[in-house]
Amino acid sequence: MSRFDYHQPESLADAVDLAARFGGQASFLAGGTDLIVQIERGRVAPRHVIGLGRVPGLAGIEVNGRIALGARVTHRAIEQTPALAGPLRCLVEGAEVIGGHQVRNVATIGGNLVNASPAADLVPCLLALDGVVTLVGPGGEREIPIERFLLGPNRTARRPDELVTRVDLPALPPRAATAFLKAGRRRAMEISVVCVAARLALDATLERCLEARVVLGAVAPTAVRAHAAERLLEGQPVGGEAFRRAAEAAQEACRPIDDVRASAGFRQHLVGVLVRRALDRCVERARRAA
Amino acid sequence: MAKIPITLTINGEPHEALVEPDRTLLDVLRTDLGLTGTKTNCLDAECGVCTVLVDGLAVNACLYLAVVAQGRAITTIEGLASPGEGLAPAGALHPLQEAFVEHGAVQCGYCIPGMILSAKAYLDDHPRPTEAQVREALAGNLCRCTGYQKIVDAVLAAASRMAGGAVAS
Image (cartoon, rainbow over all chains, first blue to last red; front, side, top):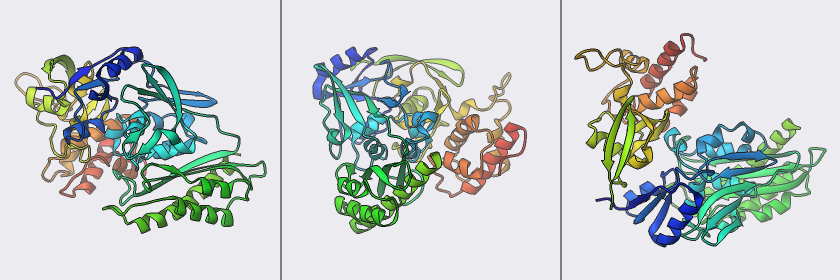
């Protein structure tokens, strides 16, 4: 006997209606690489699973100045979309280090966000790009910045009857570049010990930072922006002293834990190293593109 | 809770099944259809022994619900060799299978169906891979006999044969 009933709505309205009817007893299914594991381990036991495969309009990537990523966009699709290979490169770098090809071929951006693992690799990238999540529920549609969407490990601002439909990324200013770096114990198939996403926009001389984002993953209950580090970068000449101070501020902003993968102290050390490297990489990329 | 009828095209043949919605493609392939070439192990997307191709893309069948596979084309290890004639179960081996045999790229063999299917999906998109690319392509497939070198050699040899020329270094 099946542990759940399976529903295959063919429209967004039907998907939301089903979720409203079953409330907390229902789970949406996108790629399933988190949900099925959690069901098999007994961590969640939905009575109803609402498959999203037939709901139109959730799997597209729109590029039109700003970027709109449908909730069912896979990691593979992010890796293979040429429009994401330029200033938005951190997204590709975050997508291509998750699991093996078998996972990336099905795992989705919406799933990665809703699962809200503190170590999710795409989430810091979306934060660095000022991503805004759109949720659709019985009361209609609402938008919420990712920073306020993430509440804690496996906890988000999504209500049980709401579906994440897309993530919007505003257009980047000129001379902007991004980078994502991840430290794990091996190169592939690894949960991040620490990951960092950074974004810089440079002035016309390519010597001064106009705008900065520094985001840390796997060192706090959610991915976190290091706002103090960003303020130390904006308006300053790039490199050396500013990057060293920003890295220190990022280390102060994180609250890592000791676990089987690394000690808190080592994680804090890695934050400093990766932030400096990610910022250097942003400068290189912005200058090369200019 | 209701069973759901599904139609799957497996190795080119249509199959119908009536499945409980919580059952995985892996379970249905092995238990209902007797296709035991696809292996069961971690059930956690870590090891890759359950790798099959769905519409040409490698997936972990252990985390893929059978009902989600409705209407899709599935390739398992049983479908790689060309069909046999008469009473012969299979005709010529796929170049990847041949290369694994020639290179002795098998110890216990449990990981090999998944390795070969991951390699096939990758080579279909990237006919002339480097060694580093082959290793990355197989990152989601673990071999606990530690036979990776011969496996990588076999995939590179098969790529060369399938592309009909030299492999990029």
